Image 1 (cartoon, rainbow, N blue to C red):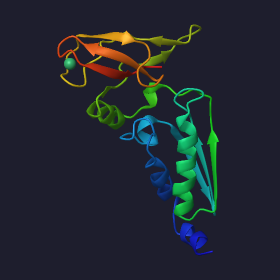
Image 2 (image 1 turned 90 degrees about the vertical axis):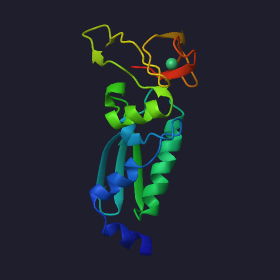
Image 3 (image 1 turned 120 degrees about the horizontal axis):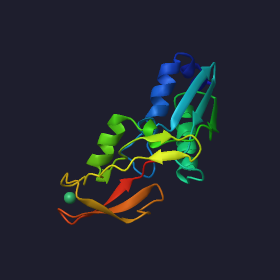
Length: 171
Ligand SMILES: [Zn+2]
């Protein structure tokens, strides 16, 4: 097949670039690389093995991401695309790139702030840092609901401009 020959000229870096361009279905301005969901990729001949870690367990977006990865890499010529879900170590917002956080804010979602440092026994320690309003930049904001448009996000309200916005929760 012609498509198989095409993949042979492509390198692991090419495969990574193709995989890294797959968008997050929930926040389409972010790629899975921005999110830190794309963990590993290995090319061997006509085979590509990709490892992704869901942002939270049972994230429905993972099925879409898996399909998109298979489509993109198959279109580039790899005959055998194996996408694996790696659940450990669990994804944290620390894996989100700075570029990803910037894009998230431009999109109108306050990016995760602080670090989800691992505690000794009580799980992640959440550092309470003021969430900045993505619209006016004010730090005078408050959480309205633990759950925004998706379970990854909390609904906030800005006391300065009175606009509600989503905050990508640190976890
Ligand atoms: Zn505001």
